[in-house]
Image (tube, rainbow, N blue to C red):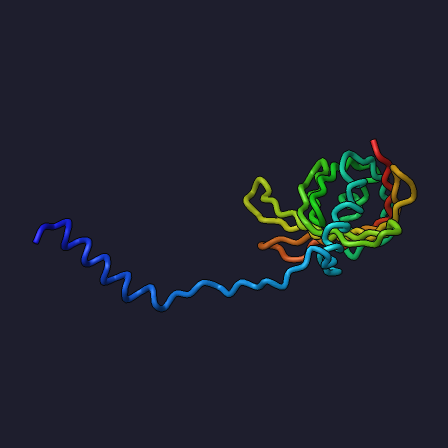
Length: 173
């Protein structure tokens, strides 16, 4: 028997053993063109659309209103900031002059929105720092919002550094 015939027979034996255990998924035929999309499908579609207005550059004014470690006040009290927001569905990347945050947006059709983002960075000494922010805001007009932001900074080496809260106002650039 040639090598080709023996190989072919071996392949047939393997297929005969394996294929009976495989089955095609059942096909349903009760799909109607008139079916309405589910609430979760339509929410996902509108959720991304309602945040499109946040795409782009923002000048953000911050007013520090609370900090749990007063020794860090000068680091946390930065009244002017530049934000670049990149929105894709309910995901947003928020770029500041210091950090890049990745997180999720949520909100309502009336313009109230919230953002939870995380930025991780390594300083020049090799310490890994994590900055978590939560923004809760309301859309004031086509190119402005106002609300509050809370941020916490900690490191793998030093633990909790501070948590601060700011009043914020954003204006589109």
